[in-house]
Amino acid sequence: MNIRERIEDVGDLPPALAAVLGIVVIALLVGVVWGLLWLPDHTKLRSPEARERARRRTESQKRQRALRRRRESLRRKKGPRTASSLRGHVPAARHVSHEDRTARHRAHDTRSVGS
Image 1: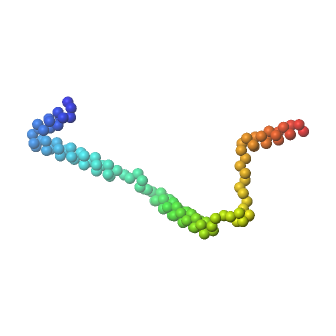
Image 2 (image 1 turned 180 degrees about the vertical axis):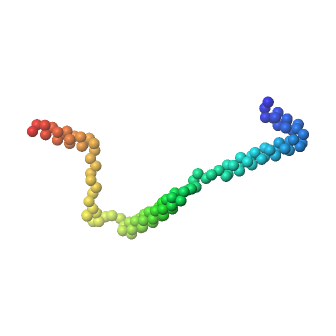
Image 3 (image 1 turned 90 degrees about the vertical axis):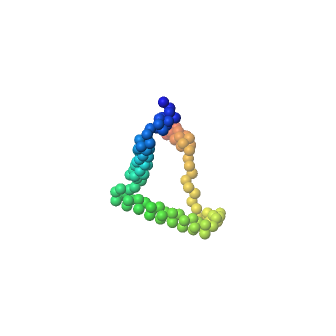
């Protein structure tokens, strides 16, 4: 039996029975929606410790944002970096590739073997 035949069979039911069947179907739909809406919220923090951690985290994030804004503001006020402002600047250590390091070790090892 396909769906169309089932719908026609319901149409052949006596009116009182069809009304009861309709009410039962509507009640089932309402029950499913109500159950889904009232499921426990998994994002809600249940323990007081978790709530306290979340509160501290949001406060920390606010402080970090304020510090970042202040740093950017100071950087903008300072202006662009010029060659004269870089005189006291110490460059970061030069990155040495793995190949350079191994070549240096090999050279060192060959020198120490001969002595």
